[in-house]
Length: 171
Length: 337
Image: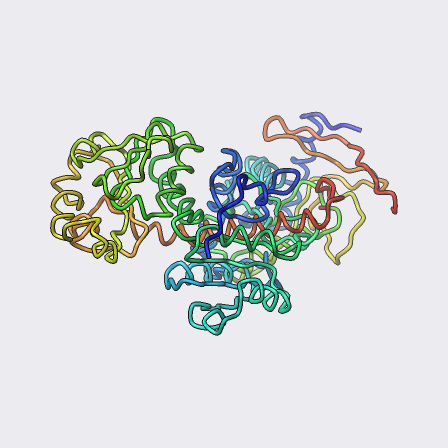
Protein backbone atom coordinates (compact mmCIF):
# COMPACT_ATOMS: atom_id res chain seq x y z
CA UNK A 1 0.00 0.00 0.00
CA UNK A 2 1.29 3.47 -0.93
CA UNK A 3 0.08 7.05 -0.66
CA UNK A 4 1.26 9.52 -3.28
CA UNK A 5 1.64 13.24 -2.77
CA UNK A 6 -1.98 14.02 -3.71
CA UNK A 7 -3.32 11.36 -1.36
CA UNK A 8 -1.22 12.62 1.55
CA UNK A 9 -2.33 16.13 0.65
CA UNK A 10 -6.01 15.16 0.87
CA UNK A 11 -5.45 13.71 4.35
CA UNK A 12 -3.59 16.83 5.49
CA UNK A 13 -6.45 18.99 4.20
CA UNK A 14 -8.95 16.92 6.16
CA UNK A 15 -6.78 17.23 9.28
CA UNK A 16 -6.54 21.01 8.85
CA UNK A 17 -10.32 21.12 8.68
CA UNK A 18 -10.68 19.05 11.86
CA UNK A 19 -8.16 21.35 13.53
CA UNK A 20 -10.20 24.44 12.59
CA UNK A 21 -13.34 22.73 13.97
CA UNK A 22 -11.62 21.77 17.23
CA UNK A 23 -10.01 25.10 17.99
CA UNK A 24 -12.10 27.70 16.11
CA UNK A 25 -10.55 31.15 15.96
CA UNK A 26 -7.65 30.45 18.34
CA UNK A 27 -5.39 27.84 16.75
CA UNK A 28 -2.95 26.06 19.10
CA UNK A 29 0.83 26.07 18.81
CA UNK A 30 1.91 23.08 16.70
CA UNK A 31 4.65 20.82 18.04
CA UNK A 32 5.94 18.26 15.53
CA UNK A 33 7.89 15.22 16.71
CA UNK A 34 11.08 14.81 14.68
CA UNK A 35 11.45 13.97 12.02
CA UNK A 36 8.20 12.82 10.34
CA UNK A 37 5.91 14.65 12.77
CA UNK A 38 7.77 17.91 12.19
CA UNK A 39 7.13 17.58 8.43
CA UNK A 40 3.43 16.92 9.06
CA UNK A 41 3.21 19.88 11.48
CA UNK A 42 4.78 22.18 8.91
CA UNK A 43 2.49 20.93 6.14
CA UNK A 44 -0.57 21.34 8.41
CA UNK A 45 0.49 24.83 9.37
CA UNK A 46 0.71 25.82 5.70
CA UNK A 47 -2.97 24.87 5.36
CA UNK A 48 -4.21 26.98 8.28
CA UNK A 49 -5.93 30.31 7.63
CA UNK A 50 -3.24 32.07 9.65
CA UNK A 51 0.04 30.35 10.55
CA UNK A 52 0.31 29.06 14.14
CA UNK A 53 3.47 29.10 16.29
CA UNK A 54 5.47 26.05 15.17
CA UNK A 55 7.99 24.03 17.15
CA UNK A 56 9.62 20.62 16.98
CA UNK A 57 10.68 18.03 19.55
CA UNK A 58 13.54 15.57 19.56
CA UNK A 59 12.31 12.99 22.09
CA UNK A 60 15.42 10.78 21.99
CA UNK A 61 16.47 11.81 25.53
CA UNK A 62 13.04 10.85 26.87
CA UNK A 63 12.51 7.45 25.28
CA UNK A 64 11.80 4.47 27.53
CA UNK A 65 13.85 2.04 25.44
CA UNK A 66 17.32 3.51 26.12
CA UNK A 67 18.26 0.39 28.11
CA UNK A 68 17.61 -1.92 25.17
CA UNK A 69 18.16 0.26 22.12
CA UNK A 70 20.59 2.91 23.28
CA UNK A 71 20.69 6.48 22.12
CA UNK A 72 18.77 7.23 18.92
CA UNK A 73 19.39 10.84 18.14
CA UNK A 74 17.53 12.77 15.48
CA UNK A 75 19.11 15.35 13.24
CA UNK A 76 18.05 18.48 15.09
CA UNK A 77 17.67 19.46 18.75
CA UNK A 78 14.25 20.34 20.14
CA UNK A 79 13.10 23.82 19.24
CA UNK A 80 10.07 25.44 20.88
CA UNK A 81 10.18 29.13 19.92
CA UNK A 82 7.23 30.09 22.15
CA UNK A 83 6.20 30.07 25.80
CA UNK A 84 4.97 26.59 26.79
CA UNK A 85 3.50 27.77 30.12
CA UNK A 86 -0.25 28.24 29.70
CA UNK A 87 -0.20 27.43 25.97
CA UNK A 88 -2.66 25.23 24.09
CA UNK A 89 -0.49 22.74 22.22
CA UNK A 90 -1.21 20.34 19.41
CA UNK A 91 1.34 17.54 19.34
CA UNK A 92 1.83 16.26 15.78
CA UNK A 93 3.33 12.94 14.67
CA UNK A 94 3.36 11.04 11.40
CA UNK A 95 2.49 7.54 12.64
CA UNK A 96 0.90 6.57 15.95
CA UNK A 97 1.44 3.02 17.16
CA UNK A 98 2.35 2.01 20.72
CA UNK A 99 1.94 5.56 22.07
CA UNK A 100 5.35 5.47 23.74
CA UNK A 101 6.78 8.28 21.60
CA UNK A 102 3.80 10.47 22.58
CA UNK A 103 4.39 9.67 26.25
CA UNK A 104 8.05 10.71 25.83
CA UNK A 105 7.02 13.91 24.01
CA UNK A 106 4.57 14.89 26.76
CA UNK A 107 7.22 14.35 29.42
CA UNK A 108 9.60 16.56 27.50
CA UNK A 109 6.96 19.30 27.02
CA UNK A 110 6.44 19.44 30.78
CA UNK A 111 10.15 20.13 31.24
CA UNK A 112 9.62 23.33 29.26
CA UNK A 113 6.61 24.46 31.26
CA UNK A 114 2.98 23.71 32.14
CA UNK A 115 0.85 23.81 29.00
CA UNK A 116 -2.87 24.68 29.34
CA UNK A 117 -3.75 21.69 27.15
CA UNK A 118 -2.17 19.15 24.82
CA UNK A 119 -4.03 17.41 22.01
CA UNK A 120 -2.70 14.94 19.50
CA UNK A 121 -2.82 14.93 15.70
CA UNK A 122 -1.40 12.08 13.61
CA UNK A 123 -1.36 11.38 9.90
CA UNK A 124 -1.71 7.60 10.39
CA UNK A 125 -2.99 5.60 13.34
CA UNK A 126 -1.92 1.97 12.86
CA UNK A 127 -3.15 0.51 16.15
CA UNK A 128 -1.14 -1.80 18.48
CA UNK A 129 -1.42 0.70 21.33
CA UNK A 130 0.43 -0.05 24.59
CA UNK A 131 -0.60 3.10 26.48
CA UNK A 132 -3.92 4.91 27.03
CA UNK A 133 -3.28 7.46 24.26
CA UNK A 134 -5.66 8.32 21.40
CA UNK A 135 -5.41 10.88 18.60
CA UNK A 136 -7.79 13.86 18.60
CA UNK A 137 -7.16 14.48 14.92
CA UNK A 138 -6.27 11.67 12.53
CA UNK A 139 -5.62 11.52 8.77
CA UNK A 140 -6.26 7.80 8.35
CA UNK A 141 -6.82 4.81 10.63
CA UNK A 142 -5.37 1.49 9.52
CA UNK A 143 -5.37 -2.01 10.99
CA UNK A 144 -1.95 -3.40 10.09
CA UNK A 145 -0.59 -6.80 11.09
CA UNK A 146 2.32 -6.71 13.59
CA UNK A 147 4.99 -7.11 10.90
CA UNK A 148 3.92 -4.01 8.96
CA UNK A 149 4.54 -0.31 9.56
CA UNK A 150 3.78 2.89 7.68
CA UNK A 151 6.81 4.89 6.67
CA UNK A 152 6.48 8.56 5.76
CA UNK A 153 9.10 10.05 3.43
CA UNK A 154 9.69 13.76 3.13
CA UNK A 155 9.92 16.60 3.73
CA UNK A 156 8.81 17.42 0.17
CA UNK A 157 6.98 15.78 -1.40
CA UNK A 158 5.39 13.83 1.44
CA UNK A 159 4.67 10.25 0.40
CA UNK A 160 4.05 7.13 2.48
CA UNK A 161 4.15 3.40 2.09
CA UNK A 162 3.59 0.24 4.09
CA UNK A 163 6.86 -1.54 4.82
CA UNK A 164 7.55 -5.03 6.16
CA UNK A 165 9.73 -5.32 9.23
CA UNK A 166 11.59 -8.44 10.34
CA UNK A 167 9.68 -10.24 13.10
CA UNK A 168 11.73 -11.74 15.91
CA UNK A 169 11.52 -15.50 16.29
CA UNK A 170 9.68 -15.32 19.61
CA UNK A 171 6.85 -13.13 18.32
CA UNK B 1 53.33 2.77 39.02
CA UNK B 2 53.47 3.66 35.35
CA UNK B 3 51.01 2.06 32.99
CA UNK B 4 51.57 2.36 29.28
CA UNK B 5 48.42 2.61 27.18
CA UNK B 6 47.83 -0.40 24.92
CA UNK B 7 49.04 0.03 21.33
CA UNK B 8 45.50 0.34 20.06
CA UNK B 9 42.58 2.02 21.72
CA UNK B 10 40.15 -0.54 20.34
CA UNK B 11 38.97 -1.17 23.86
CA UNK B 12 36.99 2.08 23.48
CA UNK B 13 34.71 0.76 20.76
CA UNK B 14 32.10 -1.97 20.44
CA UNK B 15 32.44 -4.53 17.65
CA UNK B 16 30.18 -2.38 15.46
CA UNK B 17 32.18 0.78 16.11
CA UNK B 18 30.12 2.51 18.82
CA UNK B 19 31.77 4.28 21.72
CA UNK B 20 31.66 2.28 24.96
CA UNK B 21 34.57 3.87 26.85
CA UNK B 22 36.09 7.27 26.12
CA UNK B 23 39.77 7.07 26.93
CA UNK B 24 41.54 8.90 24.13
CA UNK B 25 40.65 10.83 20.98
CA UNK B 26 43.49 9.13 19.14
CA UNK B 27 42.42 6.51 16.54
CA UNK B 28 38.75 7.52 16.66
CA UNK B 29 37.04 8.31 13.36
CA UNK B 30 36.02 11.73 12.16
CA UNK B 31 32.38 10.62 11.93
CA UNK B 32 32.36 9.45 15.54
CA UNK B 33 33.82 12.77 16.76
CA UNK B 34 31.28 14.68 14.66
CA UNK B 35 28.47 12.56 16.05
CA UNK B 36 29.69 13.43 19.54
CA UNK B 37 29.64 17.16 18.74
CA UNK B 38 26.15 16.89 17.19
CA UNK B 39 24.86 15.03 20.25
CA UNK B 40 26.38 17.72 22.47
CA UNK B 41 24.53 20.38 20.47
CA UNK B 42 21.22 18.79 21.51
CA UNK B 43 22.32 18.86 25.13
CA UNK B 44 23.33 22.53 25.00
CA UNK B 45 19.65 23.36 24.55
CA UNK B 46 18.74 21.33 27.64
CA UNK B 47 20.90 23.70 29.72
CA UNK B 48 18.79 26.65 28.58
CA UNK B 49 15.38 25.44 29.67
CA UNK B 50 13.29 25.72 32.81
CA UNK B 51 14.10 22.15 33.86
CA UNK B 52 17.70 21.46 32.95
CA UNK B 53 17.41 17.72 33.16
CA UNK B 54 16.53 14.82 30.88
CA UNK B 55 15.64 11.33 32.13
CA UNK B 56 18.10 9.48 29.88
CA UNK B 57 20.35 7.94 32.56
CA UNK B 58 17.70 7.62 35.27
CA UNK B 59 18.64 4.84 37.64
CA UNK B 60 22.27 4.70 36.48
CA UNK B 61 25.12 5.30 38.91
CA UNK B 62 28.13 7.35 37.87
CA UNK B 63 31.22 7.24 40.07
CA UNK B 64 33.66 10.12 39.79
CA UNK B 65 36.94 8.44 40.63
CA UNK B 66 39.50 11.18 41.11
CA UNK B 67 42.97 10.00 42.11
CA UNK B 68 44.20 13.54 41.42
CA UNK B 69 42.05 16.38 42.64
CA UNK B 70 40.33 18.75 40.27
CA UNK B 71 37.42 20.89 41.30
CA UNK B 72 36.30 22.14 37.92
CA UNK B 73 36.47 18.96 35.86
CA UNK B 74 34.85 16.96 38.64
CA UNK B 75 32.01 19.46 39.07
CA UNK B 76 31.23 19.61 35.35
CA UNK B 77 31.16 15.80 35.18
CA UNK B 78 28.93 15.78 38.25
CA UNK B 79 26.57 18.35 36.78
CA UNK B 80 26.53 16.53 33.43
CA UNK B 81 25.60 13.24 35.12
CA UNK B 82 22.92 14.95 37.22
CA UNK B 83 21.40 16.63 34.16
CA UNK B 84 21.10 13.15 32.67
CA UNK B 85 19.26 12.09 35.88
CA UNK B 86 22.02 9.68 36.96
CA UNK B 87 23.03 9.26 40.59
CA UNK B 88 26.54 10.48 41.28
CA UNK B 89 29.12 9.36 43.76
CA UNK B 90 32.23 11.52 44.14
CA UNK B 91 35.32 9.79 45.40
CA UNK B 92 38.45 11.73 46.09
CA UNK B 93 40.82 8.78 46.21
CA UNK B 94 43.89 10.95 46.58
CA UNK B 95 42.75 11.46 50.15
CA UNK B 96 41.43 8.02 50.99
CA UNK B 97 41.89 4.37 50.11
CA UNK B 98 45.13 4.36 48.18
CA UNK B 99 46.81 6.32 50.91
CA UNK B 100 45.83 3.44 53.18
CA UNK B 101 47.60 1.03 50.85
CA UNK B 102 44.72 -0.34 48.78
CA UNK B 103 45.64 -1.21 45.18
CA UNK B 104 43.88 0.29 42.20
CA UNK B 105 42.33 -3.07 41.38
CA UNK B 106 40.98 -3.52 44.92
CA UNK B 107 39.48 -0.04 44.86
CA UNK B 108 37.86 -0.89 41.55
CA UNK B 109 36.39 -4.18 42.74
CA UNK B 110 34.89 -2.46 45.78
CA UNK B 111 33.22 0.17 43.66
CA UNK B 112 31.91 -2.42 41.23
CA UNK B 113 30.28 -4.12 44.18
CA UNK B 114 28.23 -0.93 44.56
CA UNK B 115 26.77 -1.59 41.08
CA UNK B 116 28.24 1.43 39.33
CA UNK B 117 27.43 1.87 35.62
CA UNK B 118 30.22 4.30 34.83
CA UNK B 119 33.59 5.37 36.18
CA UNK B 120 34.88 8.83 35.39
CA UNK B 121 38.59 8.49 36.11
CA UNK B 122 41.28 11.04 36.68
CA UNK B 123 44.71 9.67 37.52
CA UNK B 124 48.22 11.07 37.77
CA UNK B 125 49.60 8.09 35.82
CA UNK B 126 49.31 7.90 32.05
CA UNK B 127 47.28 4.87 31.00
CA UNK B 128 45.44 4.26 34.29
CA UNK B 129 41.97 4.65 32.70
CA UNK B 130 42.97 2.10 30.02
CA UNK B 131 43.98 -0.32 32.75
CA UNK B 132 40.63 0.20 34.47
CA UNK B 133 38.70 -0.17 31.19
CA UNK B 134 40.43 -3.49 30.56
CA UNK B 135 39.75 -4.77 34.06
CA UNK B 136 36.23 -3.50 34.61
CA UNK B 137 33.14 -5.75 34.52
CA UNK B 138 31.46 -5.86 31.09
CA UNK B 139 28.69 -3.29 30.90
CA UNK B 140 30.50 -0.64 32.92
CA UNK B 141 31.74 2.40 30.96
CA UNK B 142 35.00 4.23 31.70
CA UNK B 143 35.57 7.88 30.84
CA UNK B 144 39.05 9.37 31.01
CA UNK B 145 38.94 12.70 32.86
CA UNK B 146 42.70 13.21 32.46
CA UNK B 147 45.56 10.74 32.87
CA UNK B 148 49.11 11.84 33.56
CA UNK B 149 50.59 13.60 30.56
CA UNK B 150 48.70 11.35 28.20
CA UNK B 151 45.17 12.50 27.40
CA UNK B 152 42.19 14.58 28.46
CA UNK B 153 39.73 13.67 25.74
CA UNK B 154 36.56 15.35 27.06
CA UNK B 155 38.42 18.65 27.46
CA UNK B 156 39.66 18.35 23.87
CA UNK B 157 36.13 17.62 22.63
CA UNK B 158 34.62 20.59 24.45
CA UNK B 159 37.34 22.70 22.84
CA UNK B 160 36.38 21.24 19.45
CA UNK B 161 32.75 22.04 20.20
CA UNK B 162 33.69 25.62 21.04
CA UNK B 163 35.72 26.01 17.84
CA UNK B 164 32.94 24.58 15.70
CA UNK B 165 30.40 26.80 17.44
CA UNK B 166 32.32 29.99 16.66
CA UNK B 167 34.00 29.04 13.37
CA UNK B 168 31.33 26.82 11.81
CA UNK B 169 33.73 23.94 11.11
CA UNK B 170 37.37 22.97 10.79
CA UNK B 171 38.08 23.28 7.07
CA UNK B 172 40.82 25.84 6.42
CA UNK B 173 41.26 26.63 10.13
CA UNK B 174 44.64 27.51 11.61
CA UNK B 175 44.84 26.77 15.31
CA UNK B 176 47.72 27.75 17.58
CA UNK B 177 48.33 25.98 20.89
CA UNK B 178 50.58 28.11 23.08
CA UNK B 179 52.68 27.42 26.14
CA UNK B 180 53.60 24.34 28.12
CA UNK B 181 52.75 21.67 25.54
CA UNK B 182 55.28 19.23 26.96
CA UNK B 183 53.39 18.63 30.20
CA UNK B 184 49.92 19.08 28.74
CA UNK B 185 47.58 16.13 28.28
CA UNK B 186 45.02 18.66 27.03
CA UNK B 187 47.29 19.73 24.16
CA UNK B 188 47.97 16.15 23.14
CA UNK B 189 44.25 15.37 22.91
CA UNK B 190 43.56 18.65 21.11
CA UNK B 191 46.21 17.94 18.47
CA UNK B 192 44.70 14.52 17.70
CA UNK B 193 41.16 15.91 17.60
CA UNK B 194 42.07 18.84 15.34
CA UNK B 195 43.88 16.56 12.90
CA UNK B 196 41.04 14.02 12.84
CA UNK B 197 38.44 16.75 12.30
CA UNK B 198 40.42 18.17 9.38
CA UNK B 199 41.86 21.47 10.63
CA UNK B 200 44.16 23.06 8.04
CA UNK B 201 47.11 23.60 10.37
CA UNK B 202 47.88 23.00 14.03
CA UNK B 203 50.72 25.12 15.41
CA UNK B 204 52.54 24.69 18.67
CA UNK B 205 54.14 27.82 20.10
CA UNK B 206 56.44 27.81 23.10
CA UNK B 207 60.01 27.72 24.34
CA UNK B 208 62.00 24.66 23.23
CA UNK B 209 62.13 23.40 26.82
CA UNK B 210 58.31 23.18 26.95
CA UNK B 211 57.68 21.56 23.55
CA UNK B 212 57.87 17.80 23.03
CA UNK B 213 60.93 16.47 21.21
CA UNK B 214 60.02 15.65 17.58
CA UNK B 215 56.68 17.44 17.99
CA UNK B 216 56.35 17.55 14.18
CA UNK B 217 55.62 13.82 14.18
CA UNK B 218 52.27 14.67 15.81
CA UNK B 219 51.23 16.52 12.64
CA UNK B 220 51.93 20.08 13.80
CA UNK B 221 54.09 23.06 12.88
CA UNK B 222 56.38 24.32 15.63
CA UNK B 223 57.18 27.96 16.42
CA UNK B 224 59.36 29.45 19.14
CA UNK B 225 58.31 32.99 18.32
CA UNK B 226 54.83 34.24 19.31
CA UNK B 227 54.47 36.85 16.55
CA UNK B 228 55.34 34.37 13.82
CA UNK B 229 53.30 31.57 15.28
CA UNK B 230 50.15 33.63 15.79
CA UNK B 231 50.21 35.15 12.29
CA UNK B 232 46.77 34.68 10.66
CA UNK B 233 45.51 32.03 13.05
CA UNK B 234 41.75 31.61 13.58
CA UNK B 235 41.97 30.13 17.06
CA UNK B 236 44.47 30.70 19.88
CA UNK B 237 44.48 28.08 22.64
CA UNK B 238 46.50 29.14 25.68
CA UNK B 239 47.69 26.42 28.05
CA UNK B 240 48.02 26.78 31.77
CA UNK B 241 51.61 27.20 32.89
CA UNK B 242 51.98 24.83 35.79
CA UNK B 243 53.94 26.71 38.40
CA UNK B 244 55.69 23.63 39.69
CA UNK B 245 57.53 23.50 36.32
CA UNK B 246 59.41 26.59 37.30
CA UNK B 247 61.29 24.68 40.00
CA UNK B 248 62.58 22.10 37.55
CA UNK B 249 64.48 24.68 35.48
CA UNK B 250 62.21 24.54 32.45
CA UNK B 251 61.81 28.31 32.69
CA UNK B 252 63.78 31.28 33.98
CA UNK B 253 60.83 33.10 35.60
CA UNK B 254 57.13 33.82 35.28
CA UNK B 255 57.83 37.38 34.20
CA UNK B 256 60.18 36.18 31.48
CA UNK B 257 57.60 33.67 30.27
CA UNK B 258 54.88 36.33 30.17
CA UNK B 259 57.11 38.72 28.22
CA UNK B 260 57.79 36.09 25.53
CA UNK B 261 54.68 33.90 25.45
CA UNK B 262 52.01 35.58 27.58
CA UNK B 263 49.02 36.56 25.44
CA UNK B 264 48.22 40.27 25.54
CA UNK B 265 46.36 42.46 23.04
CA UNK B 266 49.64 43.48 21.44
CA UNK B 267 50.54 39.87 20.55
CA UNK B 268 46.95 38.93 19.71
CA UNK B 269 46.92 41.47 16.91
CA UNK B 270 49.05 39.07 14.81
CA UNK B 271 46.15 36.62 14.72
CA UNK B 272 43.16 37.10 12.42
CA UNK B 273 40.88 39.98 13.47
CA UNK B 274 38.09 37.52 14.29
CA UNK B 275 40.31 34.99 16.05
CA UNK B 276 38.93 33.50 19.27
CA UNK B 277 40.98 32.91 22.42
CA UNK B 278 40.53 29.74 24.46
CA UNK B 279 42.01 28.37 27.67
CA UNK B 280 41.21 25.08 29.45
CA UNK B 281 41.39 26.83 32.83
CA UNK B 282 42.19 27.59 35.50
CA UNK B 283 43.92 30.67 34.10
CA UNK B 284 47.02 32.30 35.58
CA UNK B 285 46.43 35.99 34.94
CA UNK B 286 49.67 37.74 34.06
CA UNK B 287 51.53 34.46 33.52
CA UNK B 288 50.21 32.94 30.29
CA UNK B 289 47.36 35.37 29.61
CA UNK B 290 46.76 39.06 30.34
CA UNK B 291 43.47 40.12 31.92
CA UNK B 292 42.80 42.41 28.96
CA UNK B 293 42.63 39.29 26.74
CA UNK B 294 41.04 36.86 29.23
CA UNK B 295 38.18 39.33 29.87
CA UNK B 296 38.24 40.77 26.36
CA UNK B 297 35.72 40.42 23.52
CA UNK B 298 37.55 37.59 21.79
CA UNK B 299 37.83 35.38 24.84
CA UNK B 300 35.43 32.41 24.85
CA UNK B 301 36.91 30.88 28.00
CA UNK B 302 33.68 30.89 30.02
CA UNK B 303 31.65 29.61 27.07
CA UNK B 304 34.01 26.62 27.02
CA UNK B 305 32.87 25.77 30.54
CA UNK B 306 29.19 25.91 29.55
CA UNK B 307 29.75 23.77 26.46
CA UNK B 308 31.83 21.39 28.58
CA UNK B 309 28.74 20.23 30.47
CA UNK B 310 26.87 19.46 27.24
CA UNK B 311 29.87 17.65 25.72
CA UNK B 312 30.25 15.53 28.86
CA UNK B 313 26.53 14.71 28.76
CA UNK B 314 26.99 13.57 25.16
CA UNK B 315 30.04 11.43 25.99
CA UNK B 316 28.33 9.84 29.00
CA UNK B 317 25.13 8.98 27.16
CA UNK B 318 27.01 7.65 24.13
CA UNK B 319 29.23 5.42 26.27
CA UNK B 320 26.34 4.03 28.32
CA UNK B 321 24.40 3.56 25.10
CA UNK B 322 27.35 1.64 23.61
CA UNK B 323 27.57 -0.54 26.71
CA UNK B 324 23.84 -1.27 26.55
CA UNK B 325 24.03 -2.18 22.89
CA UNK B 326 26.94 -4.56 23.44
CA UNK B 327 24.89 -6.18 26.23
CA UNK B 328 21.85 -6.47 23.91
CA UNK B 329 23.49 -7.33 20.59
CA UNK B 330 20.30 -8.61 18.95
CA UNK B 331 18.57 -5.24 18.97
CA UNK B 332 17.07 -4.30 15.64
CA UNK B 333 16.06 -1.08 13.95
CA UNK B 334 13.73 1.22 15.78
CA UNK B 335 10.20 0.67 14.55
CA UNK B 336 8.31 1.34 17.75
CA UNK B 337 6.13 4.43 17.65
